[in-house]
Image 1 (cartoon, rainbow, N blue to C red):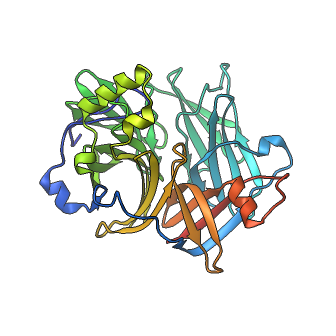
Image 2 (image 1 turned 90 degrees about the vertical axis):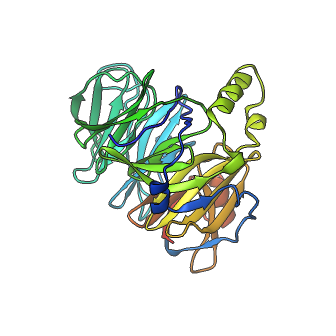
Length: 372
């Protein structure tokens, strides 16, 4: 229980009014989001040890419409597909793209979930934890056999904010209240092990970030990005936005205008909004939204310098960069995930076709892994 400030009231997440202290700032790199807002797009990023796997399957269930990488364990990648008709995990081989199975138990009966709000992969035993927010329970499934290993009972938590983090660090559950914010922290068996108090909290819909960064939970308040570790929020980077930051008061005003029918994207154009973050091995991929476009930037965490910039218009896409392998071929990679010095991402159908990898009538995505 080490810090204080504010969080959200809706799934859109967080807006705070506190600043960062000088001691924390001196220990963490500055990323000049305001000064870099006009930077041009970079040439494709040259990467090392690039591997590519065409995802394969012989039935419709083995394909997905829209998914993000939620975990990597061994040679398997776990994708989360959530849409109005589907909520499941799909498992593929990173080496050859083979479909390895899925976790799909959507429903309202015993041992079923309504929607996957968080999926926490345990590398040690090949299981995944799925918290159930309709009932005070957590389902533990085997990834290899798609069987329910255990149902873990827990106290009822009154929140709809998605949990973040991982079993090796801490699974974090944000619980806003009139007094502020309380972050409950669970271990790999979903047993409560600690908590963090965040006082003076003010909620918002647009300004802040509460998300996963690989196996870690991250939380942004004012211009400070924190990694959530057991019992504390560790300052990770200062993301300076200057006059392009959105204050809690402005957030409230824009929320009311959006609820009255105003164009949300137009309302948000003047502000720099942080939308996604991944980091490993001294490199951070930071996705922001500004002036109606998205920017996936890579920063050096030792000195805060901007290494690479991608600019794109697909607002719904969490992250997107273009990489170049040793053979000189370029690949557009989306929804990136970082873990243990390696990066993973999805190559969409359009990019697959441009690469000439397959017949457009038999289309599925691909998975890449690489190092920076």
